Image (cartoon, rainbow, N blue to C red; front, side, top):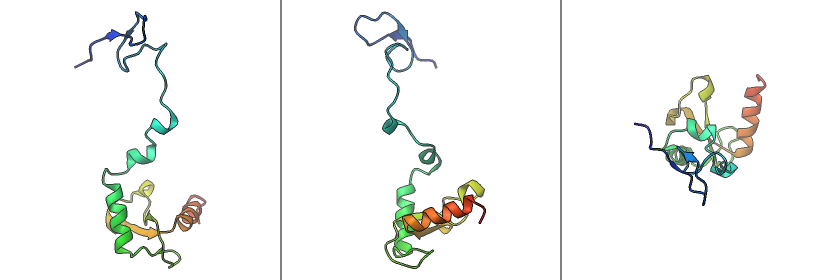
Length: 109
């Protein structure tokens, strides 16, 4: 059901608004930190839990270099290539190792 139209919240403005409470002249665009990134839209709502489960399972050890201190979860099969967010497709990885792997994948190596 559509929302009822109302008058702009800006003092003295008689224009009608539908969405934000303010007309187009007084509406402020969202700040960069208020926007939802495409990355966050594609992640499941329990991503933080899955990431932590992956890191704990792998004992915080990077599967690429073998050193301790992994702080991210990497998809073995990237989501863009049909991989899932399931735990069996995730491995613990250092941020730097993760970046290198991602760059190599994008360059076709």
